[in-house]
Image 1 (cartoon, one colour):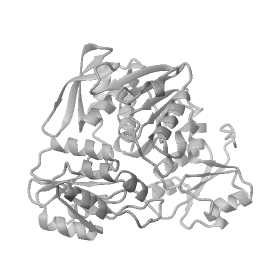
Image 2 (spheres, rainbow, N blue to C red):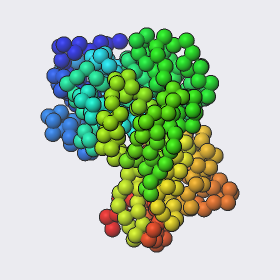
Image 3 (cartoon, rainbow, N blue to C red):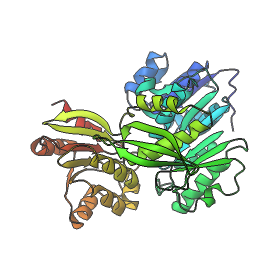
Length: 461
């Protein structure tokens, strides 16, 4: 495998440079002195930011873009071998590496490298931890899979040897990393277009845990079934956290929620209730769990409780994570990235604490594979809403197989005695909501695709 020589910066070409992670590391490598070029299918706020930094980007992926002066090429899992730029790089025998391999090599430059993994919750947890590290003066380099207002985007370049990033399991990407501290939030069925089954996913997370060195630490939820399969025999230190399990090293007691669903709790550490009480500016029980993972992380650096609380007080959420977009006709509109059944259930549980009369969800399923494999679970989780409006499936990297649609979710929800309407396109959903949203209602646009546009269109009315 090609090894980047960070002492001698060269020219790198990023295929798909506009992605949330690709863009961050393109900017980081440029800061390190590398000359960065790249391509993407369309312009965006992210690509404009990169262009403002002096990075040259083309918007037509063509073989002509790959020239002999390029020293190595970085690409994502979404790039196929038929991509003209990929093919040309192969023809020229240029060194090529996946995004994950590149991130792993970057991590070697840091003494403390924190990798946040899990089926869901990675962006929120990375963001919470980042706020605490910033408040503690650790000056971290941060790569987060969303837009974090505190750092003005998805990347912060620090001057210290502290680094924190998300670690995605899809295509076993995180197995290319070199963490000194790993966090595993949960392990559930997902990405079944790559993994065979849950057992296959668990094996991948076990391998991730095994990446940690003897002097490292694994922070992991004790709610994960058969936990010893993941942690047994590891040479590193293991710390557990849980909202529900009082036997975890970090546990929450005396949980309460304010009128907007923001949680607070007292920390129980190794079975002993402390005098530390933490209040969050974000909603939901799941975010209390994410915060407990961050408290475990904070303990490794002896960060004082008041410093932690100061950091928590400044974190108001990440873009597309229970993000308040505005109002329409007296109804509050929230947007959320949830697209896995567990995420949907957590978001709707949070909404129960948020003031509202009727809870509406405009849901856009993400990928045909996920929708088909988790069809019943998706329908069941959505039943927590008063009424569900269904958009067509967001294909992402997939082709329509013709045997699954959002109509199947509608049928299951109605069969269970709950309310759902399949409308397909965004314009139809907007018109339906214009007629039916009333004062005091709560609308959540939900999904990992572009369903956010529905709420934004209503707010702009």
